[in-house]
Length: 624
Image (tube, rainbow, N blue to C red; front, side):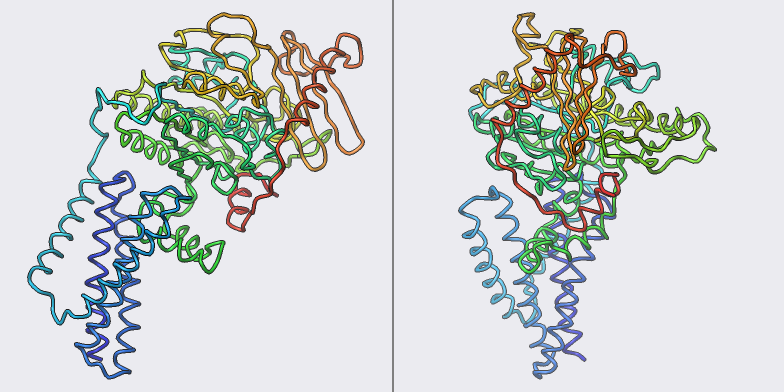
């Protein structure tokens, strides 16, 4: 019994020491991740693992008759060596890119160093005074670091930073607010005060009044923004489709000219699993990050778990147990805080970042006081979509007017919430001294339908409520404040615009065009907007030229083409003759763009969807 107690005591002491080392490094590198709860969890994980190892070693020691001193030595060897392997390997690997050829050598060096530490620990009959003082110092450093992390406010203002790394263009920040209809913002004429910060931002830069997304659900729409190509070209338009490595993403193109790149995502489609990490130096997903990302214990657990299980089930269960699931609104401050910390850490080096916010996405859940638009607080909220149809030519189930009004009010409350997050982000960038030296693009991947065309949500049509999105750009030296552009533009135009601002070479493979000539008043932009929604069972395509729009839908053998005059019928409630001579040029152009896309597409790649990912997507209404 004394052998077991001795081994357990030694293991817990060393485990606690490593826990404080981990807390200390989190406090230095990412203090925003710290909270009393995360410190308690981290201490519990280390002590639990060390305690389990101590019990096992003590039992072995007792069985071998090692006695208390021998059990202590064996426990110190195992726990010190294991803890050192975690700390040394993860600290070393964190400095390298995922595909770096040096990673195996770093891992080997960490294992050898950990083995040496284990041998040294084995000879400790008792802790020498110097080692005891070192332990106390590390405990104190961890405690001070944690306390500083809790109390630390906004980073101090950074001024006069010197750029490095070869890039000469401005910083780039794309803020994508998921599921944001343009016509629910004050800047685009909405009557409710949902967006004071966004409206002020629109007055401060260029506003594109008629910007169109290239698809109407997140994966293909966001992939088009980041590739500058239509969904039919990049092939990431089906649920299991992954962005092919042959596609050149915006972060890759900017990193090639000296930018540091990062993605901060709250959406389960915009993750590494679906290929959105290409060219990204620092990728943060709300599902795989936060506490788990910054702690050495969790990083090492994930790595070890994947050696025996490619789905890392143990790691994922533990992560979910610790972190839980965040609501769509709760995710946005987390990823925004992480972005600000990352920008602060760049110390003036040119950066590109993509921030994917989620608040307006179903289920609509504005926390008080952002639920102020709800007309009747006693009315039970609609927490799930009514029955909707993803099939063209079919309709969803209607709601009574009060329930529909409640849904819209809660959606508007979510917009008000994310508006506050965005406004705070701008102020924090101003405090860091980088606001005016950063091209900030505010955009959405698609809109949202509230039975406008007898359906709900998104991903079922290419009508205006889904394809027309906000596009606002602020960069004082190139985008005049108050500029309003009514020419139809597309979200694929963002990539060539940013590449031109960065001084990167133009790419012939892009479907989009730079918006800079249009901003400068020069002719030449096509003034057309193409969208497409492709499913296994059919497709819908839309094309806008001026105020004319055609929509073509196909499901199996059934086909339908509709034409609308958006000047007199902006909500597309009255279809015009689509077979007559007036519609023929637009239909021909629509077919020509489709044929061109087919001729310039990548090879399709299928990704993997594990049970955890399926659960995430079902919660957001993507899977049945």
